[in-house]
Length: 199
Image 1 (tube, rainbow, N blue to C red):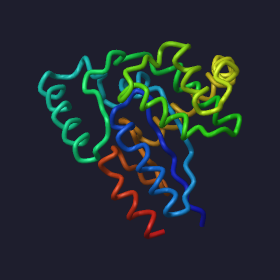
Image 2 (cartoon, one colour):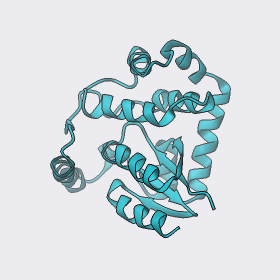
Image 3 (cartoon, helix red, strand yellow):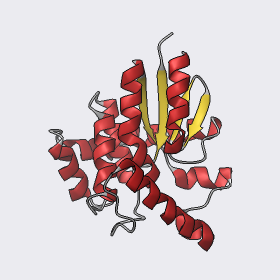
Image 4 (spheres, rainbow, N blue to C red):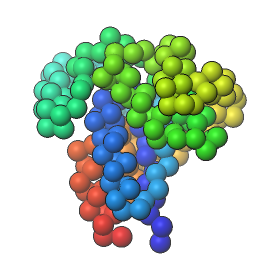
């Protein structure tokens, strides 16, 4: 049976950024395909008991920074703890990724680049010019892709993917689903790796 991972995330999540390239490497090692599915966590949080970062208790917000520092050092990845443009509206970037996916383009590569733009380059994903520039740097037609991202079809697909995520019990980002088993968080990638190895 073919191995397939459904990858639910938001393009403004630091945890998604930390796991993004490692997920791709694990999937490649096991010959698994990845369905790239950015979803709307502003719809997911209210039905799953989650809260946007700014509404969480202070001790949770403080601990998050300790964890980000630890993972940044452990993975030796560039990561700005307080990016200039976070939080930002994730919807435009999410729809850009979906538009790329619909056209058979490298949606995963685009997701990597958008995540890096926030967490390593201090760029604003709510700015259309940033989205165009990130896509253009990947040899995609950023302006055309942004136009496609604003279509009704892409908006409908974004909502459908979010509905599916809710039905599957997704509550945090990133979540990797393999054979109907969810793995929440980039710190669960080792478990996903083992599940893929087991078949």
